[in-house]
Image (cartoon, rainbow, N blue to C red; front, top):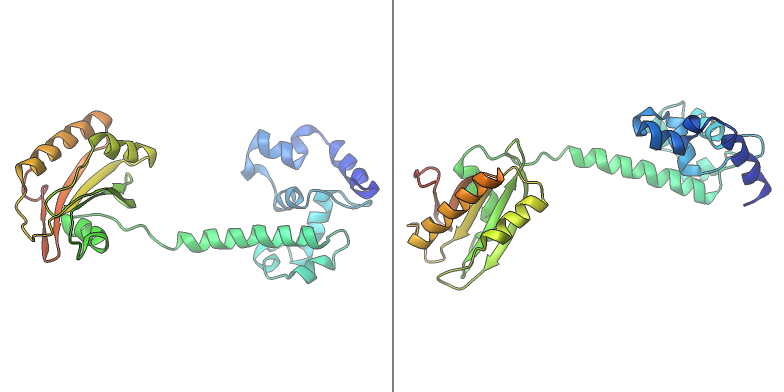
Length: 234
């Protein structure tokens, strides 16, 4: 630690513990911190004259106290501020870029399942044109939005194994509130086998016990589908 870092660190260490940015975050949560305090955590230290928080305020002033304007500054722009070297500038830019990407990703809405056709369309890209059977799950949240599709097993032309323990292990690990079962019939036959019916009954019963209901079991073919829910087989 340089003499400058030591001096500025001492300034913050002299504050009450609940007012130091790092300790404040731990004690009161991230929402309790000001923008300057959050930036102070990123830069870590200030200068001889300024604490990390005071230096963060200078940084914000350069961007008119607007985080959107701050995100437009380049590394060179930030390095013009006394006490901000390349490493600190890069850290600020990286943090703001993460924030931008998070905001961007929120625009993409998770698909919501409202009927059997929605389930069929969601699983279609994974089962279309396959010469063998595969068993998949659609994991859903409380709003029946798809958390993710998951392949459980892959078999031969006439069958595949679906282990109930593995199915609900996956559902629990992803905190699913409900599941939809799906497997394909490469033959194009939409009639469920007795094994299909028996498996569905066992999984539906297990789902009730675990409070992860099985909403449907879709038999997929390239030309159409059969929904156990629609047919009253659940």
